[in-house]
Image (cartoon, rainbow, N blue to C red; front, top):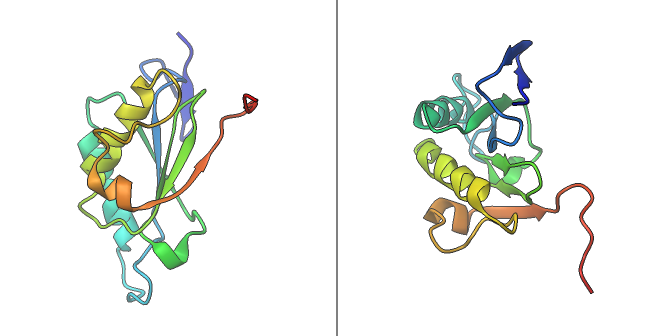
Length: 137
């Protein structure tokens, strides 16, 4: 089994094809206060808690450049499309994990609409193709 490095530590229990959720820890709602902890950091912690034992990897990041539609997160899995979500709230951790699990199980690399949690339906910002993607004509 291949492994990934997370914060300088190789963890043989985390396969490289595991779904990963990147949560912006510097996010706040547009016009929200500059207080600490930032709502994005609270969302990241809630997402990590929701992911315990699920096989989904959670990685905090310092900015997803989606500030006008924060709170933001991205969901990706090798060979799949990457999804960027915004307009999330601190309670969306379980929804992000559920979406990541849907993506990891998608045979076509596309997160299915059916079964996708509501915050991920209304908060979709972008869908980015996987590396080496070629459009079928």
